[in-house]
Image 1 (cartoon, helix red, strand yellow):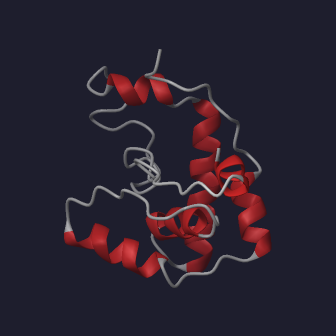
Image 2 (cartoon, rainbow, N blue to C red; image 1 turned 120 degrees about the vertical axis):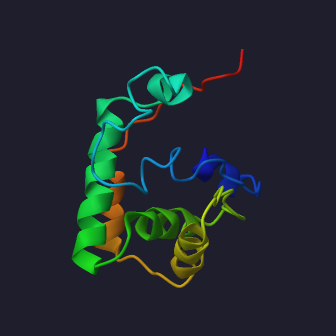
Length: 127
């Protein structure tokens, strides 16, 4: 949607830019909520291909010595149509990561690596 919105001069306010925390937490796929039915929305939204993206985010973050959330947010903020992501910070370090992402510039190679495994999903939650 971002390329379409940019083409049509429509601003984008991404909701849950860290994918319900998936892009911000440790590399563990299974958490107390994930895959247990405790978060049915996430269980419906994400599949194995999404975790390929998560692994690349983690690799780039490790190479930079930065938290994965900063890498994910920096990628999103590099998209011209994005006006402001709705981060949903619940702790001060979440705000720190969001602010740090404002000044982080990813290389063309990093952007390509982050985007390569992504597979579009159908729209969910709207009928």
